[in-house]
Image 1 (cartoon, rainbow, N blue to C red):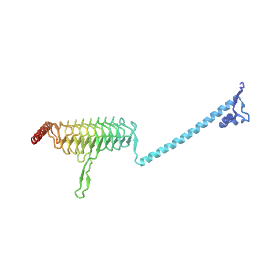
Image 2: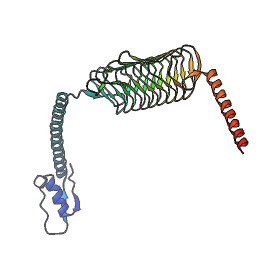
Image 3: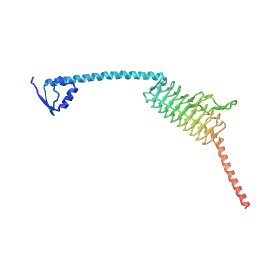
Image 4: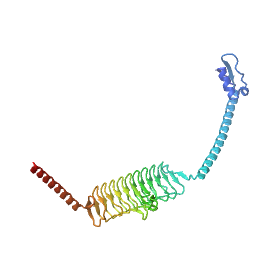
Length: 338
């Protein structure tokens, strides 16, 4: 084999730093730099083989060291994670991140894998959520609440003490299942006492409830909403109310506690129904009307107190005629006095 001599002109300081860091000064037989600005170093093939072997060994040692460090770090991380999990369990933190949306779901909740629980939403223990349900961010599904398939809960919906049917839509800020407005004054002490509100809200299928509406849970009977009923924004439904199927409640409608609505009832905007009132099926109530007596016959109603629409219109016409007549009498009296 022919000998090869390669001359490399290299800075003595750089040569010394490189060879010292790799431990090559003694192995390659190189002399530390002198006082000259540059040093002529002659490399032979044996130098190159020794140099390659030394560099390869150094990198293998570095790789082995990094592998041992990585294993120690992984072991410590696993130990820390296990410790944190045990700590969380001891504190009662049994929620897990739902893989389909990133929300928090309790370990004891029954959630269909196809349901979406968006980040920021919470599903509590004992809740049951069927397939293809959407729980929007900020929404809370309380303990023992059931939600039917294909139901959509938009942002900040709060459900407690209720059962929801299939294919319902609840818009932002809907609240179901909170305590109703039930109080009495104790005759002995004169203090206000809260009545127990311990029953539920039962919602049928294909029901839509607008933003900001509230439905109170029952005290002596469940509050119920029939199938295909549509409720507008900012509607208040008191405790123990029974609403039939296919009803329409427009914005700002208020239903007092324990009232009963039949099927296909329409309540126009800002109309109200007194507590313990019964309205039969196929009744329409005009806007800003007040129902303070039972309605026993189907038809259109208007006014305060609510009357059959034709009678209410007749009263309005008679009142206007009377006002015009009185105004003419007053003008005639003024003319006679002059």
